[in-house]
Length: 469
Image 1 (cartoon, rainbow, N blue to C red):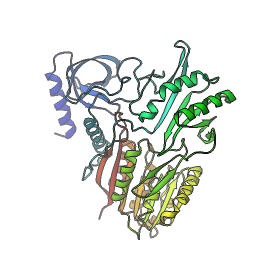
Image 2 (cartoon, rainbow, N blue to C red):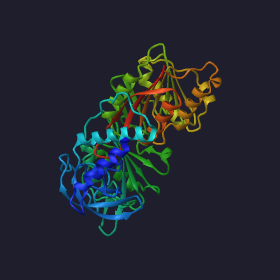
Image 3 (cartoon, rainbow, N blue to C red):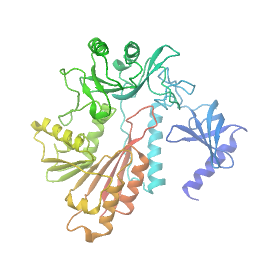
Image 4 (tube, rainbow, N blue to C red):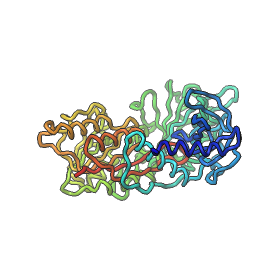
Protein backbone atom coordinates (compact mmCIF):
# COMPACT_ATOMS: atom_id res chain seq x y z
CA UNK A 1 0.00 0.00 0.00
CA UNK A 2 1.40 3.42 -1.00
CA UNK A 3 1.72 6.31 1.45
CA UNK A 4 -1.18 8.10 -0.23
CA UNK A 5 -3.38 5.01 -0.13
CA UNK A 6 -2.54 4.51 3.55
CA UNK A 7 -3.48 8.12 4.38
CA UNK A 8 -6.76 7.81 2.48
CA UNK A 9 -7.61 4.56 4.25
CA UNK A 10 -6.79 6.07 7.66
CA UNK A 11 -8.91 9.15 6.91
CA UNK A 12 -11.80 6.97 5.81
CA UNK A 13 -11.53 4.96 9.03
CA UNK A 14 -11.62 8.15 11.16
CA UNK A 15 -14.61 9.41 9.19
CA UNK A 16 -16.48 6.17 9.86
CA UNK A 17 -15.99 6.64 13.62
CA UNK A 18 -17.76 10.03 13.61
CA UNK A 19 -21.47 10.21 14.39
CA UNK A 20 -23.61 10.64 11.31
CA UNK A 21 -23.51 14.19 9.98
CA UNK A 22 -20.24 15.08 11.71
CA UNK A 23 -16.82 15.53 10.10
CA UNK A 24 -13.45 14.34 11.42
CA UNK A 25 -10.74 16.92 10.66
CA UNK A 26 -7.42 15.36 9.61
CA UNK A 27 -5.21 18.30 8.62
CA UNK A 28 -5.01 21.96 7.63
CA UNK A 29 -4.55 23.20 4.09
CA UNK A 30 -2.38 26.14 3.04
CA UNK A 31 -5.29 28.51 3.66
CA UNK A 32 -5.63 27.26 7.28
CA UNK A 33 -8.87 25.41 6.53
CA UNK A 34 -9.57 22.10 8.22
CA UNK A 35 -9.53 19.11 5.86
CA UNK A 36 -12.00 16.26 6.33
CA UNK A 37 -12.99 13.30 4.19
CA UNK A 38 -16.42 11.83 3.96
CA UNK A 39 -16.83 8.06 4.05
CA UNK A 40 -16.94 8.07 0.22
CA UNK A 41 -13.56 9.85 0.11
CA UNK A 42 -14.86 13.29 -0.87
CA UNK A 43 -12.78 16.11 0.63
CA UNK A 44 -14.45 18.85 2.69
CA UNK A 45 -12.61 22.08 3.57
CA UNK A 46 -13.97 23.58 6.80
CA UNK A 47 -13.04 27.16 7.65
CA UNK A 48 -12.11 27.46 11.33
CA UNK A 49 -11.78 23.74 12.11
CA UNK A 50 -8.57 22.18 13.47
CA UNK A 51 -6.95 18.75 13.11
CA UNK A 52 -8.34 15.99 15.41
CA UNK A 53 -11.63 17.86 15.88
CA UNK A 54 -15.10 16.48 15.24
CA UNK A 55 -17.33 19.20 13.84
CA UNK A 56 -20.54 19.95 12.05
CA UNK A 57 -20.34 22.37 9.15
CA UNK A 58 -22.52 24.18 6.65
CA UNK A 59 -21.53 23.46 3.05
CA UNK A 60 -21.67 26.57 0.87
CA UNK A 61 -19.88 25.35 -2.25
CA UNK A 62 -19.87 21.96 -3.97
CA UNK A 63 -17.64 20.51 -6.67
CA UNK A 64 -17.28 16.97 -8.00
CA UNK A 65 -14.33 16.08 -5.76
CA UNK A 66 -14.57 18.58 -2.88
CA UNK A 67 -16.79 20.86 -0.87
CA UNK A 68 -16.18 24.12 1.00
CA UNK A 69 -17.95 24.61 4.32
CA UNK A 70 -18.21 26.96 7.28
CA UNK A 71 -17.83 25.75 10.85
CA UNK A 72 -21.12 25.42 12.75
CA UNK A 73 -20.11 23.63 15.95
CA UNK A 74 -17.09 21.87 17.44
CA UNK A 75 -18.15 18.64 19.17
CA UNK A 76 -14.69 17.34 20.08
CA UNK A 77 -12.18 20.14 20.50
CA UNK A 78 -8.49 19.95 19.65
CA UNK A 79 -6.09 20.20 22.58
CA UNK A 80 -4.27 22.83 20.47
CA UNK A 81 -7.27 25.16 20.16
CA UNK A 82 -6.63 28.41 22.08
CA UNK A 83 -8.39 31.70 22.70
CA UNK A 84 -7.38 34.18 19.96
CA UNK A 85 -5.18 37.00 21.21
CA UNK A 86 -6.85 39.72 19.14
CA UNK A 87 -10.44 40.92 19.66
CA UNK A 88 -10.91 41.37 15.91
CA UNK A 89 -10.07 37.76 14.98
CA UNK A 90 -12.90 35.36 14.21
CA UNK A 91 -15.09 33.63 11.66
CA UNK A 92 -18.01 36.03 11.94
CA UNK A 93 -18.93 38.70 9.39
CA UNK A 94 -16.75 41.75 9.87
CA UNK A 95 -13.85 39.87 11.47
CA UNK A 96 -10.37 40.94 10.40
CA UNK A 97 -8.87 38.73 7.69
CA UNK A 98 -5.24 39.59 8.45
CA UNK A 99 -4.67 36.43 10.52
CA UNK A 100 -6.07 32.94 9.99
CA UNK A 101 -4.54 30.80 12.74
CA UNK A 102 -4.89 32.66 16.03
CA UNK A 103 -7.18 29.90 17.29
CA UNK A 104 -4.32 27.37 17.00
CA UNK A 105 -1.50 27.19 19.57
CA UNK A 106 1.69 28.83 18.28
CA UNK A 107 3.80 25.66 18.45
CA UNK A 108 1.13 23.74 16.56
CA UNK A 109 1.10 26.45 13.87
CA UNK A 110 4.80 25.80 13.27
CA UNK A 111 4.24 22.03 13.16
CA UNK A 112 1.48 22.49 10.58
CA UNK A 113 3.77 24.63 8.42
CA UNK A 114 6.55 22.05 8.66
CA UNK A 115 4.10 19.39 7.46
CA UNK A 116 3.01 21.65 4.58
CA UNK A 117 6.65 22.01 3.54
CA UNK A 118 7.33 18.26 3.72
CA UNK A 119 4.10 17.42 1.87
CA UNK A 120 4.88 19.89 -0.91
CA UNK A 121 8.43 18.65 -1.32
CA UNK A 122 7.25 15.06 -1.62
CA UNK A 123 3.98 15.35 -3.53
CA UNK A 124 5.10 18.09 -5.95
CA UNK A 125 8.83 17.45 -6.23
CA UNK A 126 9.24 13.81 -5.13
CA UNK A 127 11.97 15.05 -2.78
CA UNK A 128 12.60 14.20 0.86
CA UNK A 129 15.15 16.23 2.80
CA UNK A 130 17.83 14.11 4.44
CA UNK A 131 17.64 16.31 7.56
CA UNK A 132 14.82 18.44 8.92
CA UNK A 133 16.09 21.76 10.19
CA UNK A 134 14.80 23.08 13.50
CA UNK A 135 12.12 25.70 12.74
CA UNK A 136 13.17 29.33 13.02
CA UNK A 137 10.81 30.99 15.49
CA UNK A 138 10.58 34.32 17.27
CA UNK A 139 8.05 36.73 18.79
CA UNK A 140 4.50 35.84 17.80
CA UNK A 141 2.94 39.22 18.63
CA UNK A 142 4.05 42.72 17.69
CA UNK A 143 6.34 41.35 15.00
CA UNK A 144 4.92 42.92 11.85
CA UNK A 145 7.16 45.85 10.96
CA UNK A 146 5.70 46.18 7.46
CA UNK A 147 2.02 46.34 6.57
CA UNK A 148 -0.31 47.79 3.97
CA UNK A 149 -3.41 49.19 5.65
CA UNK A 150 -6.51 50.05 3.66
CA UNK A 151 -8.30 53.34 4.31
CA UNK A 152 -12.01 53.82 3.71
CA UNK A 153 -14.36 56.70 4.54
CA UNK A 154 -17.65 54.97 5.39
CA UNK A 155 -20.44 57.51 5.05
CA UNK A 156 -23.06 55.33 6.74
CA UNK A 157 -20.90 55.08 9.85
CA UNK A 158 -19.73 58.66 9.67
CA UNK A 159 -16.11 57.62 10.23
CA UNK A 160 -12.93 56.44 8.56
CA UNK A 161 -11.80 52.82 8.89
CA UNK A 162 -8.12 51.87 8.71
CA UNK A 163 -6.85 48.29 8.79
CA UNK A 164 -6.79 44.98 6.96
CA UNK A 165 -9.72 43.71 4.92
CA UNK A 166 -12.49 41.74 6.52
CA UNK A 167 -12.34 37.98 6.25
CA UNK A 168 -13.20 36.95 2.67
CA UNK A 169 -14.38 40.45 1.86
CA UNK A 170 -13.31 43.64 0.11
CA UNK A 171 -14.52 45.73 3.04
CA UNK A 172 -12.10 47.22 5.56
CA UNK A 173 -12.34 45.71 9.05
CA UNK A 174 -13.43 48.02 11.86
CA UNK A 175 -10.22 47.73 13.88
CA UNK A 176 -9.12 49.64 16.97
CA UNK A 177 -6.05 47.49 17.73
CA UNK A 178 -3.86 44.97 15.92
CA UNK A 179 -1.86 42.54 18.02
CA UNK A 180 0.59 41.57 15.28
CA UNK A 181 1.66 45.17 14.68
CA UNK A 182 4.23 46.68 17.05
CA UNK A 183 2.37 48.09 20.09
CA UNK A 184 3.28 51.68 19.27
CA UNK A 185 1.84 51.24 15.75
CA UNK A 186 -1.29 49.47 16.99
CA UNK A 187 -1.86 52.44 19.27
CA UNK A 188 -1.89 54.71 16.20
CA UNK A 189 -4.90 53.07 14.52
CA UNK A 190 -7.57 55.11 16.30
CA UNK A 191 -5.67 58.44 16.08
CA UNK A 192 -5.06 57.78 12.38
CA UNK A 193 -8.77 57.26 11.81
CA UNK A 194 -9.48 60.64 13.40
CA UNK A 195 -6.68 62.28 11.41
CA UNK A 196 -7.88 61.08 8.00
CA UNK A 197 -11.52 61.82 8.85
CA UNK A 198 -10.54 65.43 9.55
CA UNK A 199 -8.63 65.87 6.30
CA UNK A 200 -9.88 67.49 3.12
CA UNK A 201 -8.60 64.40 1.24
CA UNK A 202 -10.42 61.75 3.28
CA UNK A 203 -12.17 60.49 0.10
CA UNK A 204 -8.97 60.20 -1.94
CA UNK A 205 -6.50 58.49 0.41
CA UNK A 206 -7.04 54.73 -0.08
CA UNK A 207 -3.99 53.33 1.71
CA UNK A 208 -1.36 53.82 4.40
CA UNK A 209 1.76 51.69 4.17
CA UNK A 210 3.77 51.04 7.32
CA UNK A 211 7.53 50.50 7.46
CA UNK A 212 9.42 50.38 10.76
CA UNK A 213 13.19 50.63 10.92
CA UNK A 214 15.46 50.38 13.94
CA UNK A 215 14.82 54.02 14.86
CA UNK A 216 12.12 55.32 12.52
CA UNK A 217 8.45 54.52 12.01
CA UNK A 218 7.47 55.59 8.51
CA UNK A 219 3.91 55.97 7.24
CA UNK A 220 3.34 56.25 3.48
CA UNK A 221 0.09 57.99 2.57
CA UNK A 222 -1.23 57.06 -0.87
CA UNK A 223 -3.16 60.05 -2.20
CA UNK A 224 -5.02 60.15 -5.50
CA UNK A 225 -5.22 63.95 -5.63
CA UNK A 226 -2.70 66.62 -4.54
CA UNK A 227 -2.93 67.36 -0.81
CA UNK A 228 -3.99 70.76 0.41
CA UNK A 229 -1.64 72.87 2.54
CA UNK A 230 -4.09 72.40 5.42
CA UNK A 231 -3.83 68.60 5.12
CA UNK A 232 -0.05 68.77 5.07
CA UNK A 233 -0.18 70.85 8.23
CA UNK A 234 -2.41 68.19 9.85
CA UNK A 235 0.08 65.47 8.86
CA UNK A 236 2.98 67.43 10.33
CA UNK A 237 1.13 67.94 13.61
CA UNK A 238 0.37 64.20 13.80
CA UNK A 239 4.02 63.33 13.09
CA UNK A 240 5.22 65.67 15.83
CA UNK A 241 2.72 64.30 18.36
CA UNK A 242 3.28 60.59 17.65
CA UNK A 243 6.92 60.51 16.57
CA UNK A 244 6.41 59.16 13.05
CA UNK A 245 7.73 60.12 9.63
CA UNK A 246 5.26 60.84 6.82
CA UNK A 247 6.00 59.91 3.22
CA UNK A 248 3.67 60.81 0.35
CA UNK A 249 2.92 58.59 -2.64
CA UNK A 250 1.06 60.24 -5.52
CA UNK A 251 1.25 57.35 -7.99
CA UNK A 252 3.45 54.24 -8.12
CA UNK A 253 6.05 53.23 -5.50
CA UNK A 254 8.75 55.19 -7.37
CA UNK A 255 6.92 58.45 -6.61
CA UNK A 256 7.26 58.13 -2.83
CA UNK A 257 8.92 61.11 -1.13
CA UNK A 258 9.30 62.51 2.35
CA UNK A 259 6.80 65.12 3.43
CA UNK A 260 9.67 67.00 5.11
CA UNK A 261 13.38 66.36 4.71
CA UNK A 262 15.57 65.82 7.74
CA UNK A 263 15.52 63.49 10.68
CA UNK A 264 17.05 60.01 10.97
CA UNK A 265 17.10 57.71 7.95
CA UNK A 266 14.90 54.62 7.71
CA UNK A 267 17.20 51.62 8.16
CA UNK A 268 17.57 48.20 9.78
CA UNK A 269 20.65 46.39 11.01
CA UNK A 270 22.12 42.89 10.98
CA UNK A 271 24.24 43.08 14.16
CA UNK A 272 25.86 39.66 13.73
CA UNK A 273 27.62 40.97 10.62
CA UNK A 274 27.84 44.68 11.45
CA UNK A 275 25.71 45.50 8.40
CA UNK A 276 23.47 48.60 8.35
CA UNK A 277 20.79 48.71 5.63
CA UNK A 278 19.10 52.00 4.67
CA UNK A 279 15.85 51.53 2.74
CA UNK A 280 12.81 53.39 1.48
CA UNK A 281 9.42 52.52 3.00
CA UNK A 282 8.19 51.08 -0.32
CA UNK A 283 11.28 48.87 -0.78
CA UNK A 284 10.91 45.15 -0.19
CA UNK A 285 12.33 44.23 3.20
CA UNK A 286 11.34 41.35 5.45
CA UNK A 287 8.17 41.91 7.46
CA UNK A 288 9.65 40.41 10.62
CA UNK A 289 13.11 41.86 11.47
CA UNK A 290 13.58 39.54 14.47
CA UNK A 291 13.25 36.47 12.25
CA UNK A 292 15.23 38.07 9.42
CA UNK A 293 18.32 38.39 11.62
CA UNK A 294 18.14 34.71 12.57
CA UNK A 295 17.33 33.72 8.98
CA UNK A 296 20.38 35.50 7.55
CA UNK A 297 22.63 34.01 10.23
CA UNK A 298 21.44 30.45 9.61
CA UNK A 299 21.53 30.82 5.83
CA UNK A 300 25.16 31.93 5.94
CA UNK A 301 26.16 29.15 8.31
CA UNK A 302 24.53 26.61 6.01
CA UNK A 303 26.13 28.25 2.98
CA UNK A 304 29.54 27.92 4.64
CA UNK A 305 31.35 30.31 2.28
CA UNK A 306 35.14 30.43 2.63
CA UNK A 307 37.56 33.29 2.03
CA UNK A 308 38.84 31.72 -1.20
CA UNK A 309 35.37 31.11 -2.68
CA UNK A 310 33.07 33.01 -5.00
CA UNK A 311 29.35 33.24 -4.18
CA UNK A 312 26.38 34.32 -6.32
CA UNK A 313 23.32 35.75 -4.57
CA UNK A 314 20.36 35.32 -6.93
CA UNK A 315 17.38 37.68 -6.44
CA UNK A 316 19.61 39.77 -4.15
CA UNK A 317 17.21 42.66 -3.48
CA UNK A 318 18.85 45.42 -1.44
CA UNK A 319 21.67 43.09 -0.39
CA UNK A 320 20.06 41.52 2.69
CA UNK A 321 22.14 38.36 2.16
CA UNK A 322 24.77 39.73 -0.23
CA UNK A 323 26.46 42.12 2.18
CA UNK A 324 26.69 39.61 5.07
CA UNK A 325 28.08 37.04 2.61
CA UNK A 326 30.72 39.61 1.63
CA UNK A 327 32.00 39.56 5.22
CA UNK A 328 32.91 35.86 4.78
CA UNK A 329 33.51 34.99 1.11
CA UNK A 330 36.31 35.92 -1.26
CA UNK A 331 34.10 37.42 -3.97
CA UNK A 332 30.34 38.03 -4.29
CA UNK A 333 28.01 38.68 -7.21
CA UNK A 334 24.47 39.90 -6.50
CA UNK A 335 21.92 39.63 -9.30
CA UNK A 336 18.48 41.27 -9.32
CA UNK A 337 15.86 42.02 -11.94
CA UNK A 338 15.61 45.80 -11.56
CA UNK A 339 18.21 48.42 -12.50
CA UNK A 340 16.76 50.76 -9.87
CA UNK A 341 17.08 48.09 -7.19
CA UNK A 342 20.63 47.31 -8.25
CA UNK A 343 21.48 51.00 -7.89
CA UNK A 344 20.12 50.90 -4.34
CA UNK A 345 22.17 47.77 -3.61
CA UNK A 346 25.31 49.54 -4.75
CA UNK A 347 24.49 52.44 -2.42
CA UNK A 348 24.16 50.00 0.49
CA UNK A 349 27.48 48.45 -0.48
CA UNK A 350 29.13 51.87 -0.29
CA UNK A 351 27.34 52.60 2.97
CA UNK A 352 28.98 49.50 4.53
CA UNK A 353 32.41 49.95 2.93
CA UNK A 354 34.08 50.41 6.34
CA UNK A 355 33.46 46.71 7.06
CA UNK A 356 36.18 45.72 4.61
CA UNK A 357 33.85 43.64 2.48
CA UNK A 358 35.05 41.22 -0.18
CA UNK A 359 34.94 42.46 -3.80
CA UNK A 360 31.22 42.66 -4.54
CA UNK A 361 29.32 43.44 -7.74
CA UNK A 362 25.62 43.96 -8.41
CA UNK A 363 24.10 43.47 -11.85
CA UNK A 364 20.58 43.63 -13.26
CA UNK A 365 19.15 40.63 -15.11
CA UNK A 366 15.74 39.20 -15.92
CA UNK A 367 16.00 36.10 -13.74
CA UNK A 368 12.83 34.62 -15.21
CA UNK A 369 14.54 34.27 -18.61
CA UNK A 370 17.77 32.56 -17.58
CA UNK A 371 19.57 30.27 -20.06
CA UNK A 372 22.47 27.83 -19.71
CA UNK A 373 24.63 30.22 -21.75
CA UNK A 374 23.93 33.05 -19.31
CA UNK A 375 24.91 30.85 -16.35
CA UNK A 376 28.20 29.98 -18.00
CA UNK A 377 28.83 33.67 -18.76
CA UNK A 378 28.36 34.53 -15.06
CA UNK A 379 31.39 32.38 -14.26
CA UNK A 380 32.10 29.71 -11.69
CA UNK A 381 30.82 30.16 -8.13
CA UNK A 382 31.33 27.52 -5.48
CA UNK A 383 28.15 28.46 -3.64
CA UNK A 384 24.77 30.01 -4.44
CA UNK A 385 22.20 31.79 -2.30
CA UNK A 386 18.78 31.81 -4.00
CA UNK A 387 15.97 33.95 -2.55
CA UNK A 388 13.23 34.31 -5.20
CA UNK A 389 9.74 35.80 -4.99
CA UNK A 390 6.67 33.57 -4.82
CA UNK A 391 7.10 32.54 -8.46
CA UNK A 392 10.27 30.69 -7.49
CA UNK A 393 13.44 30.21 -9.54
CA UNK A 394 12.19 27.96 -12.34
CA UNK A 395 14.30 29.36 -15.18
CA UNK A 396 17.43 29.29 -13.03
CA UNK A 397 16.80 25.69 -11.96
CA UNK A 398 16.08 24.62 -15.55
CA UNK A 399 19.27 26.25 -16.80
CA UNK A 400 21.28 24.43 -14.14
CA UNK A 401 19.58 21.13 -15.05
CA UNK A 402 20.32 21.69 -18.76
CA UNK A 403 24.01 22.22 -18.02
CA UNK A 404 24.09 19.00 -16.02
CA UNK A 405 22.50 17.00 -18.83
CA UNK A 406 24.38 18.71 -21.69
CA UNK A 407 28.01 18.90 -20.52
CA UNK A 408 29.10 20.16 -23.96
CA UNK A 409 27.54 23.53 -23.05
CA UNK A 410 29.72 24.04 -19.98
CA UNK A 411 32.97 25.16 -21.64
CA UNK A 412 34.93 24.62 -18.44
CA UNK A 413 32.16 25.93 -16.22
CA UNK A 414 31.39 23.92 -13.08
CA UNK A 415 28.17 23.99 -11.01
CA UNK A 416 28.06 25.25 -7.41
CA UNK A 417 28.87 22.67 -4.78
CA UNK A 418 26.15 23.98 -2.45
CA UNK A 419 22.92 25.94 -2.88
CA UNK A 420 20.94 27.50 -0.04
CA UNK A 421 17.41 28.25 -1.26
CA UNK A 422 15.23 30.61 0.80
CA UNK A 423 11.57 30.36 -0.19
CA UNK A 424 8.30 32.17 0.48
CA UNK A 425 6.22 29.57 -1.38
CA UNK A 426 6.60 25.84 -0.59
CA UNK A 427 4.94 24.84 -3.86
CA UNK A 428 7.47 26.60 -6.10
CA UNK A 429 10.33 25.48 -3.83
CA UNK A 430 9.14 21.88 -4.27
CA UNK A 431 8.91 22.29 -8.03
CA UNK A 432 12.44 23.70 -8.22
CA UNK A 433 13.75 21.09 -5.76
CA UNK A 434 12.44 18.38 -8.07
CA UNK A 435 14.47 19.83 -10.93
CA UNK A 436 17.63 20.22 -8.83
CA UNK A 437 17.45 16.68 -7.41
CA UNK A 438 16.18 14.70 -10.37
CA UNK A 439 17.72 16.59 -13.28
CA UNK A 440 20.60 18.76 -12.02
CA UNK A 441 22.53 16.25 -9.91
CA UNK A 442 21.87 17.55 -6.39
CA UNK A 443 20.80 16.04 -3.06
CA UNK A 444 18.42 17.88 -0.74
CA UNK A 445 20.46 17.61 2.44
CA UNK A 446 18.25 19.74 4.69
CA UNK A 447 15.00 21.71 4.82
CA UNK A 448 12.93 23.49 7.43
CA UNK A 449 10.35 26.21 7.99
CA UNK A 450 10.81 29.83 8.96
CA UNK A 451 7.88 31.23 10.95
CA UNK A 452 8.11 34.71 9.46
CA UNK A 453 4.35 35.35 9.75
CA UNK A 454 2.93 33.87 12.99
CA UNK A 455 -0.86 33.40 13.09
CA UNK A 456 -1.08 33.35 9.29
CA UNK A 457 -1.00 30.40 6.90
CA UNK A 458 2.01 31.86 5.06
CA UNK A 459 4.89 29.35 4.92
CA UNK A 460 8.49 30.51 4.51
CA UNK A 461 11.22 27.90 4.39
CA UNK A 462 14.82 27.11 3.61
CA UNK A 463 16.41 24.17 1.83
CA UNK A 464 20.01 23.13 1.23
CA UNK A 465 21.21 21.29 -1.89
CA UNK A 466 24.59 19.59 -2.23
CA UNK A 467 26.09 18.50 -5.54
CA UNK A 468 26.03 14.69 -5.57
CA UNK A 469 29.35 12.91 -5.86
